[in-house]
Each structure stands twice: as structure tokens, then as C-alpha cells.
Image (cartoon, rainbow, N blue to C red; front, side, top):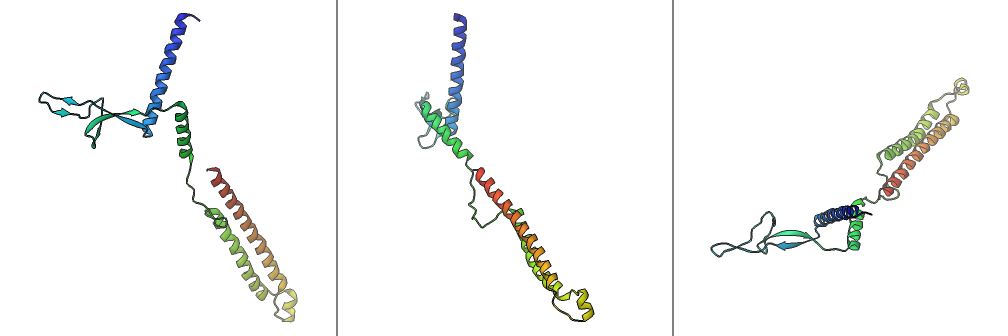
Length: 185
């Protein structure tokens, strides 16, 4: 490799390392991992000591009554990597209110469950009403008002099957919602 190319590569590597170090220091300071470097005291012509914020030392410590600048804490590469891992883990963590096994917070699942129970209960009531009021061909001619079990059982079976299907779909949606919540962890 020629000397010119080697110098160029070294200069660019040093420039890249300086940029990475500056970015790392900025990140550490953003996380609050910094130390305070206080400005030197300034003595004016009258002998008064002043230490006010300036462009170089923009912050002021009220307790010490001195201006300071923030300097990133000195950390090793391993420490910095661990800091980044912990920050990423905490950033991706979401707070999820624990859901009891029998409790559903999904609106659609809750609505379908309500409709399913409405089918079952409504079908039982409708079966009794239809069994009492329905006249069959035989009962019409015999003037014998009997409870029509075949009509009532038909209503009950249809409403029970419809209601159970609705409850099943609601449970499937509820389980999918719980799986989705766990995947977001």
C-alpha cells in the first residue's frame, strides 16, 4: 500500500473514531451519565471572584455557586455496551395490565359473547312460546290444545347451536387477543 493511501486511511479512521466517541459521549450525557467540570474562578480588577455561566461553561450549580460544563463519564467499551443493552431492553418493555383467564377486555369478543347468550336465552323463551301457541294440523281438527314439543325442541336446538357457535367465535377472538398481548412483550 502506498504511503499516501495509508495516511488517508489512518486520517479517515481517526475522524470516524472521533465522531463515534462524540456520539457516544452525547448519548452518555443524555442518559445523565456525566460529571461536572467547574469553570475556573475569574478575579476582576477590584478583586471580586466571579464564576458565571459562559459559552464554554453553560450550566450553573446553585449549591456550589459555580458555572460548569458536562463531561461524559468515562466508561469502558464493555460498560457502554451493557448500558446500551439495558436502555434498549427498558425502552422496548411495555406495561400490560394482567388479564385474568376468564376476563375478556376485547370489545368484539364481549359483543359476540353477549349475542351468543342472547340467542340461547331468547331461543329457550321462544321455544316455550312457540310450543304453546303453535297449532299443528292434527290439533287444529281435534280442538285439543297441547304443548307442541317438536316445535319447542326445534327452537331450542337451533338457538343452542347458534349461541354456542357465537360463544366459540368470541373465545377464539379472546385467545387471539391474549396471544397478541403476549407477543407485544
